[in-house]
Structures are given as C-alpha cells and as structure tokens.
Length: 228
Image 1 (cartoon, rainbow, N blue to C red):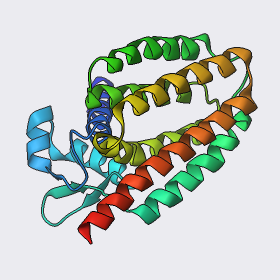
Image 2 (cartoon, rainbow, N blue to C red):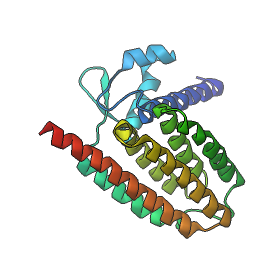
Image 3 (cartoon, rainbow, N blue to C red):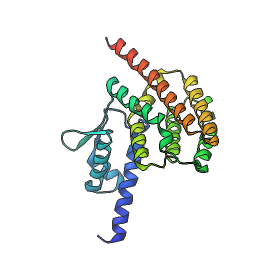
C-alpha cells in the first residue's frame, strides 16, 4: 500500500467513525440497536477490516458493545451509570478554566451565535433531531476552545455517551422548556466567553449539566414507576 492509499484508508476510517458516532448521538441508532458488520461494510463500500477499527474505537468509548457473531450493539445506560457520568462531567465543568487559554477563539463565539439563531426554528417546530443536532454542535464548538487535548477528548466522549440518553427523554419533557433552556444556555455561554470569564463559563456548564441530569432522572424514575 502506497502513501496515497494509506491516506485514503485513514480518511475513510475517520469519516465512517464520525458518521456512526453522529448516528448514535442523534438516535438514528437507538440504544439496543444491533449493527451488522456486513451491512455497514456494504453501505460504506469498505472491507470489514477498516470497519472493525471504527467499531473497536466506538466500543472503547462505551457507545457499542460486541455481540455474538458479526453483530455489535449500541449500548444502553442505566440510572447508576448515568449518575456516575454526570458526576464526572460536573467536576470537569467546574475546572474547565484550567484547560482553556485566553483569548477565546473568535470562531467559537461565532459558531455559538449562529447556533443561537438556528435554535429559534425550534420555537415553531418540534424537531427532536434538529434539537439534538444543535446540542451536539454546541458541544463541538465549545470543545474547540479547550486547549488541553486530553481534556477535550474526555469531555467529548462523555457527551456522546450520555447526550443521546437526554435526547431519548425529550418526548417526555416539556418541549418549550427544553427550547428555552437551550436558548438561555447559549446566551449565557456567549456572554461569559465574550468577557473571557472562564470561571463563570465553568460554573454555567456545571449548572447546565446538573439541570439536565435532574430532568433525565425524573423521566427515568417515572418510567420505572410505570413498569412496576
């Protein structure tokens, strides 16, 4: 394999990884969904070797788990695991000021401003996929401001592991409240980042994570009560 072919192979693996991770995050593959290696390899036009590299990476990030045969299953998250992940997220949020350098990249603030404008569409239509995609794009925009590479990877991985759980709860939450929370979150984040207030930024991220966890836990508790 020459250098050009290696570059193409790496590019293909990266593209498939981003596609599958996004599908999991936006519930195109909901928790418990079985993915077939043969089907995915045919869809992306690759052999099973590069595809397995992608699946192994997603398994390492706790988004997939190997099943018997050639199937891989999208992981589910129970209340205990959810609590543990949010606990870590909130600790990291409080300490974000340690991982961000000033000045904040103008591209980060510009991206958040564009997402704030896009979020206005949600006031007119209950588009859960759009809501999830905007939340994901917010996370990616904020990750771009984190200068510590390892911290950025951990924070991104934690979001992708549990952001989908919040999104699955949205139909049982108050839509207008979720839209307003997103809009107010964006306004607050833009304001503190424009001021370069990194401790304020971390404080707001921690509070936003705590509120999200509280809303998700209420839905899960109601579901458990109904099952009983």
